[in-house]
Image 1 (cartoon, helix red, strand yellow):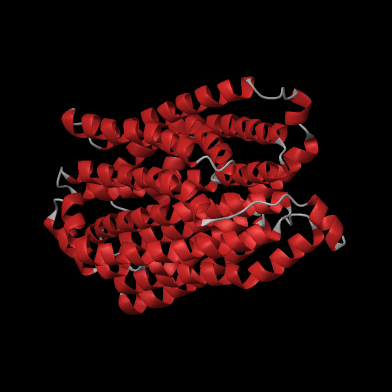
Image 2: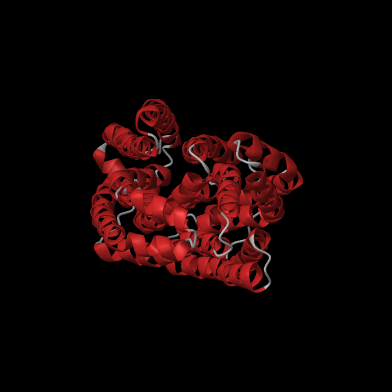
Length: 452
């Protein structure tokens, strides 16, 4: 395609600091409420002063997240395809993408709810923890899985919202979902004394709140837009594209969760106290990650929009500015954790042995923001551009590096080696994706077609 024809087919738009912050700031606030759920839930259970309950909650959360983060393709894939349709100015296709994702969410969610006992057994087998930890894990997973259709529907709703760059709407959804979750965790877990079961039921109620708010707004919006035929929603070629994209993102997401599951499992082998301490510190990493995800989300939407619009200048500007903001945020989070991390640990857990162990390994957790920021930014770019095959391959290679480092370093340095292996995993993810960014961008914009 010659330059003149490419220029005529491109839809120009500007990428500025303001446009990035318009997405990143509200979504940073929205994402921040998600690790707050983990902090509140851990703090609620931690008040019982029982390391086995705290460890069981952590193990149950891992079992749940292994399943649901594997389905994160519903959010990421929807964001990518909606953003590209938005870049082309194709409003009807934006809506069609959402309904395809919603169909997958409902079917998959019902299956997951029905197979909750199998998920619990698999989690117990994998964690190989003591009986009381396993019993807590089982109770948590069986309750959380009842909300599976709601949780997956929220992925589809949020994916549509982020694909259009509507950070304020995304914030509203997360406040509804996570706000209900946090309030009920405290009420059911502490006030009524339900403990881990109360935290799990609070999560289900939060998912229901998010789904109701999201669907209410979207259905009203769609009623004012173009009518979408059933044939278009169920279009075979469009579904195949969605499934190919989702397949690669699912493999990538599962590999990511596998790394953190291995991290948690190895911590369990060092004892219940170390398992609980690592769970506390991982909550700090989650806080940092959702700050970073705000700018990664901006990269998703703007990169996807640029690919849909076939406008390379906006793509390059989005990659550069989002990365600058991401590194600035990562440095800030590391400094905050180094200064105030011990105080946060004390708030989360009342068990003295867990606190002491967590503080001993606090610097490792504090620096995860800096070692992981490039991975977050590259993930955002590659998701938005729908370069899912590259994401899948680089993640699998990063996982192999992590497993090798885990086997070597933990044998020599114990839990210090475990945290070092995690840092190597985060760094490898970012550098490997960066290494293929240039060639992939040149191929995409020279051909005028998004690579898959």
